[in-house]
Image 1 (spheres, rainbow, N blue to C red):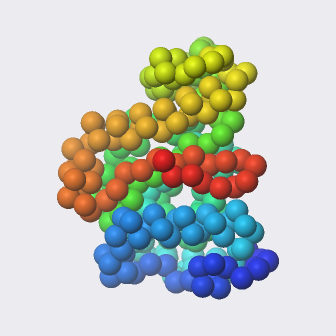
Image 2: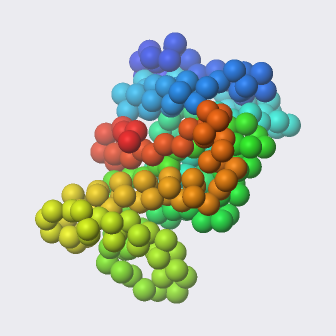
Length: 222
């Protein structure tokens, strides 16, 4: 439950009722982006509202019609539902270190959008990402080696474009790799999922990128 510190800019409260099928069908991708931006504004400005999660859990037990699917890093400092001020039943969240795309993530996103009706996919990178830093440092360790190989294309792209010190000790270089990684993930979705690419071309969904800022709590959409 959230404690309301000041009046929410989303109308004073976050609905305790999970979205219905009809309400989901009436949403557009742009409307969902607007909802997420406003929710993040509430979060970053500490304008959170009370919601009864116990009631919402019961009401969402037998069905779900979420608005969006978010691919986020596993980082414990990025609480996705809180960042967008959303409740139970509002979002599908896929969490994987470095928020990269693989076959399982693609399948999850196809399920979220084609089967369950989500209108938006957001690839959510974040500042000070340890997976990004480890990829820059070319860390080799067990299964981490293969995982970080999925981020290496972004490191290569950043090395080709960035002007300045290209190391993990340079926050601007780390940020550049993070942005490239988000954009690379978006391209991977379009290249490797004909289902999602067609849905985007038909206007049924949008696929966008965003970066979460640790110190402010703000999300900047790319």
